[in-house]
Image (cartoon, rainbow, N blue to C red):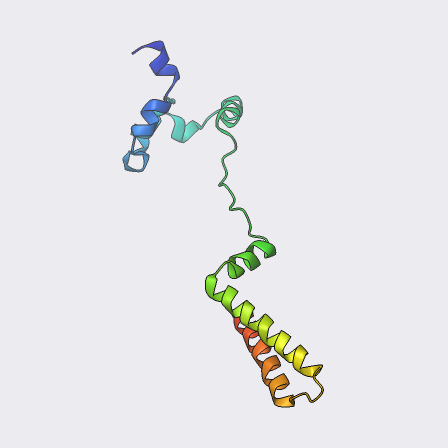
Length: 124
């Protein structure tokens, strides 16, 4: 084996099915002492591995902000259509209120539509 192959286990590690190896085979592939399971690694060796590979912890999933959640809802075509209908219904109710003879039924049904659409979008 060449010096390059012994100091660089990564190309070999990429092709290994680690989950299928026994403990002893894994220790050999990682080029560690055979007594690793009873003795462990030294503090210096642990520090070296931490510096080389980073801390031994799972990557945390990035949390979704409230604005990202809202955008994910609004980006849907059906939700956009519902929002447009709600705006039109609200405009219809407001315009009807300023007429000389406002129709209370039209005003009421328009605001009910706005409320129901808002409720559906919020619940979804």
